[in-house]
Length: 368
Image 1 (cartoon, rainbow, N blue to C red):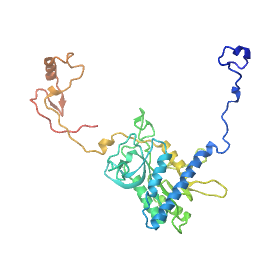
Image 2: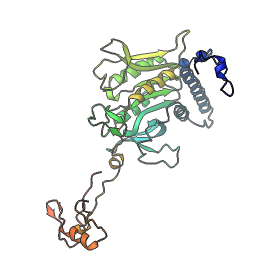
Image 3: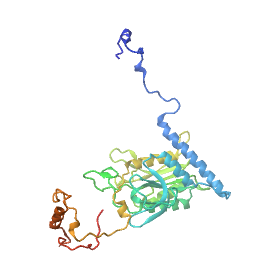
Image 4: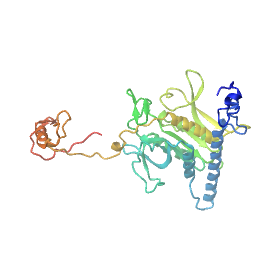
């Protein structure tokens, strides 16, 4: 209805249209919390929950009580709620197709949509599920409290994960994770996001000392094997950044071929007076950024992690299913089909199979 329509021309409406003021229909501004801050507040709430439950774990362990779910169980639970549904959050063993394993991992961020587990655990929540490295987006090591010893142990596990063999490497040119473009090339494999998440600092430990140790160990490693982040809940977050050569602006390191030739430098986020802070928010922000750019490759997982089985084929080619162009138009005419089958000759290994008396050939293999 036109806004300039006289009221007497609305008489045909039942009920009468009246005079709605559609010009005033706009989204309202939230007065208490803006959506811009909503995700930060959500991460801050999760961080406080994790810190409280990690502290309870420490107290129960000191008093020799059964402490219930470990800190890593709590972290998996909260991460599963926070990440999009396409990312499964599991515990288990990560292995590669060459038979090497990184052992048991606290948190495995996995693509269960395209990749099967190569070995199932006894129960849904068992830690003895085995996952192929090709289906892994990220691995986290969880520590109730962080010290020099627990930092080094966590980094050893994560570096081992990054050294597993991915075959074949995925490509940025893939349209989706199970389908590539016509000119897709395996030029830059997605790298596993590795991070340490600690519920707090061990007694008497200084954050900056651990940061220096974390950076120094990473400095001994090739780029592809670096541990990407260190999170100490309520205390600080350490990651890496670089400078965009085109704009000169500081950007988050992507840990890919795109920044392999650029210098990286560590970045430390921690609470400052009067400023809102959440180490967990910084961590989730970096993780989501990595996941957005990560593409995996699901082809041939069953073959690579299975057994090489050999087949036998009948020697007599009367058993062959003929091409449509050569088969009898009347497949119910057994005599005609047998005649064409006898005349059809196929050569395997340089030897014709026509006119053979029967039996089975020497075992061979079939490519998937």
